Image 1: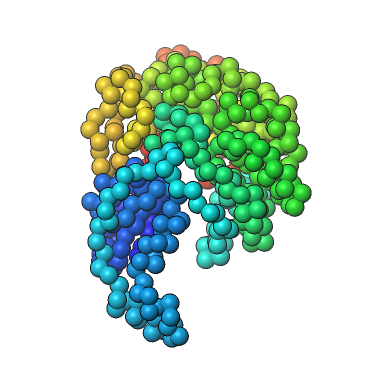
Image 2: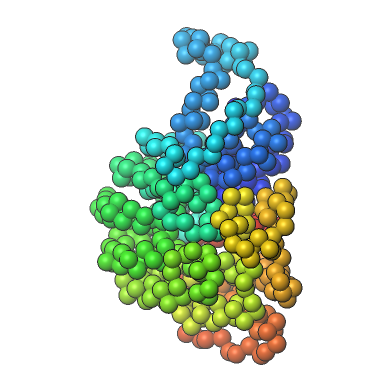
Amino acid sequence: MIAFYLPMHTATRLAEPLIARCRSVNPTARLVAYGLYAPLNAAWLRERGVSDVIGPEAEEELVRIVNSQLPTANFQSANPRASVQDSRAARPSPRPAACSPQPTGSSIPRLAFIQPDRTSLPALTEYASLQMPDGRRKIVGSTEASRGCKHLCRHCPIVPVYNGAFRVIPVDVVMQDVAAQVAAGAEHISFGDPDFFNGPTHARRLVERLSAEFPQLTYDATIKIEHLLRHRELLPLLAASGCLFVTSAVESVDDAVLARLAKGHTAADFEEAVALCREAGLAIAPTFVAFTPWTTVESYLELLQTIARLGLIEDVAPIQLAIRLLVTEGSRLLELTDIQRRVGAFDPASLTFPWSHGDATVDVLHREVMATVLSTAQAGRTASFSAIWELAHRHAGREAPSMPHDVSRPAAYISEPWYCCAEPAEFHL
C-alpha cells in the first residue's frame, strides 16, 4: 500500500508524477489518496490508478485498509521475516474500492484522536524555520488543535468537504504532540488549524497549558478577522502566552469582493482587527487573494495603499500580492453567476476551472507582479513591495508617490510563505 497525503492544491499537483512513478515501480501496490483535496479530485485520482480516496479525517480508514491487506496469519507468526514474506505472497491484487459518497458536514467521521508519531519524519531542522526580527532563526514544529471550520467562505476548499463542521482535538493530545516536538528541538509551534478560534474556550485552555508547561515556547495561529473582533478579550492572553503573530485571511479590502467571497468581515473590520492586535501586543500577518475576476488596476492600487497606510508591509509575504483566485471542483464560487460566465471547462492539468479576467490589463498585471515577487525574493519584503508599488502605478498610468518611511517594522515570519486558495506558481512545481 502506498498512500498520498493531499492537504492542499499544490500537493495534489505535485502528487501526479509521483503516483505515475509508483505505479511503474510497484504495479501491484494498492494506491490510496487522503486529505482535504482527495475527495475534491476523486474521479481524477481514480483515473490515475488510485483505488481508495479518503477525506481529511483519514486515520481510522487508513488503518482499516492496511489491516485488510494483511492475512490474519501475519499477526500470529513468531517469525517476523516469515511474516513479511507471507504478507507479500498473500497480498490481494489492488482493485478499485466502491465509490462511496463524499462525506460532508455531520457525516464527517468523529475520530478518537491520539498523539501523532512523528519519529520517522525528517528532523525539524529540515523544515521551514521562524525568521525573527533580530536575525535569529527558531526551529519550528507544527500541530493542530482542531480540524474543519464552522464557516462557509465561498472560495475556501474546506467548505465542500466539512460544510461547516469542525472537530476539536483534546488538549491533552495536543500537548503530548507539542511536548514530543519540543523534545525534538522545536522552539516555536505553528498551529495549522483553519481557525484557532472556532472553539475559543478550547483555544484558551490550550494556550494556558502551553504557557504553563513551556514558558520559553512561542507560537503562531490562524484566526478569522470576525473572530479577532468577537473574541477580542482573548488577544492579550495570546500575546502573554507566547503568540508572536496571527495569520488572518483578509483576502480583499473591497467590500463588494468580500461579500462575494462570504468572508464575514468588511475592510473596516480588518482595520479594527489590526488596531486590536497591536494594542494587545500581537503582530497580524494578513493574507490576500489579490487577483479575482472583480479586481481592477485601481482596486489593486487600493490594496497596496491600505497595506502601506496600516504599516503592514513587513507583515505581508510578497507572494500574497500575487495570489490569484483558485476555482476548484466543488467550490462554492461556482454558485456565482459572474464566475460561471468567466470560467472554462474543468482542466485536469491544473485541477481547476480556469478563468480569465474581462480586462486583459489585469491579467498582464498579475503575471508581472508574480515575476516581480520571484525576482525580488532575496531582497526583502519592503524592497519587493516597493517594486510592486512602482509596477502597479505604472499600469495605472500615473507616477508612483513616495513610499511611506515609517512602515518598515521588522516582523517574525515563517521562512516558507504559507498560502492556499491559489494556483501554484511554476517554480513551486
